[in-house]
Image (tube, rainbow, N blue to C red; front, side, top):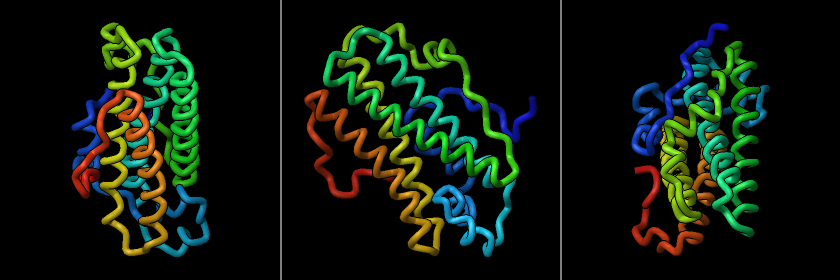
Length: 197
């Protein structure tokens, strides 16, 4: 089975934040399709192979987040209501995944395959998770990386509508991050412009 790019390895937060620097930024066409605006996308010029590659990197990050939450939920370390919130956040990452897959396919690409749960467990060092706080800290680190990665695409757009789509995804990730900080009893970021830098 051939993919346009190989499945990305599990990326630490710094790599997640910098993935756009390595691959470029999403074109307006890809974001329009991601937002369900196919009519808008049809009137734009684009390089679909570049868009597919970038979207596949983002899809790899969503696979990672989904599996990280699965590992946390299955660990037995999360107690209610934290477990319920983790499952909610996982469902939102699944919605991001599904939107990315649909967009990649509309662009004529092949979505990157999800790795096995065991591969994610090894890469995320799940065996070192010994408490609910450990699980939440891992999730917070991944969510911050996702926030910064999605914010990285916003400056590429001339259209406010398209920038808004990327902003909406980044908003989900930011909400996850701040809720996790709160659950950990950590202070919220105090500096203005804390995200996307």
